[in-house]
Image (cartoon, rainbow, N blue to C red; front, side):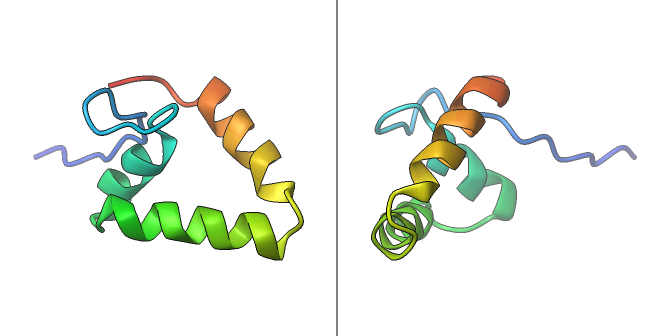
Length: 63
């Protein structure tokens, strides 16, 4: 039994690049929670989360 989880960007449940939905699938939580955390991080970290999102969009493969 090989139950290895792989982080991928979602193709079906995407808003911009599918990063939040892919991360939510990986963590087994609702994508809305991850999206809200990214928005809160945007305001709390003064836009620093945008760089992390862009890096994840470039590095993480699609489903």
